[in-house]
Length: 207
Image (cartoon, rainbow, N blue to C red; front, side, top):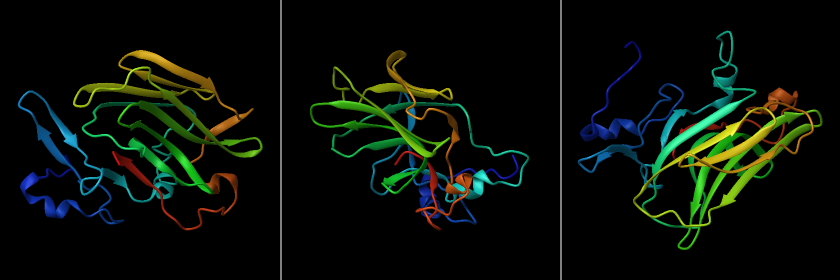
């Protein structure tokens, strides 16, 4: 359809362009084992699929309403882990959580070490007293096997966060903010310039 473009894995050199003029890039490859196909992210060259470079611009889009969810959210991913490490790996991110003084948006991911598996969700909300950073982590009783496919779902209904793995509820908790108002995508929602300044946040599948 209009605005869509098919990409060829053999012409990948034009995929490494995530700019304001071309925000949908393909830092990824479609891999197949003969039975199933999936997008492979290696955490180095093929880090993720960048949907947009500027989350703030997407939030304040000229359309009648923002395309981003504001009061409720459901994220779902089918994923396979091929190697271990100590860093948290993101499956979906809209915002940023790498800087303590500039956390906005939401993310869902996992930590897979040599001995343990942990699933995570982070969420920034506007609250009656300003900004609230919410986090939910769950250390699985059994480590996820490498090379196997898993389903992870993270939900937020306006007052509670929950994680589901392979169709089973693993953990949930209410938000710490007494009166959560909306998901925080930009500090402009609070009427302040804030500590993020002019730094842009991305929407990324995989990281």
